[in-house]
Image (cartoon, rainbow, N blue to C red):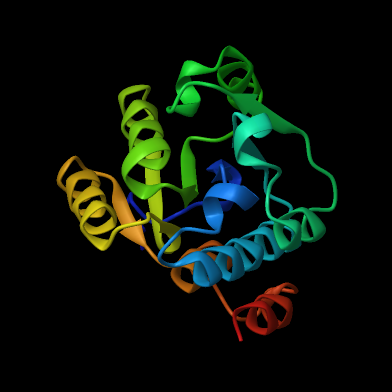
Length: 185
């Protein structure tokens, strides 16, 4: 049977981690959940051998990426940016074009600034965008929720960490099932 076109497909999916940096992360409403779920996504994407792209906004001012995220990454090449949208950074656009992805799973901060602008720009560029609602945050709840609502109204698919990982897994008889099950616990 044919699968729904919005279901994530392993051969087309990548993870984008946006600006989860120490100084700004410290004031986020859902800081712990964002970091914890981003680490789960990283571990899951590594288990499934899927591409991961990570950005930092003005590192000098906002500090490095949170340590648990860096520790989870086996190897990483962080794209630094000054534009709020990742798509405003030529190095990011070039790096993304070199990945075999058409579906992008997005997590990061802040929901209503860098995450939202990037998600909308990626959608305009022809990507299917999946916002991981339990792995994004803003300082204020109204900004966070309004951004999620706006993105969803524009056609961005709102999902959760566990949904993403099991959607990519597809079935329980794969060799990665036990690993993914352990990651989401």
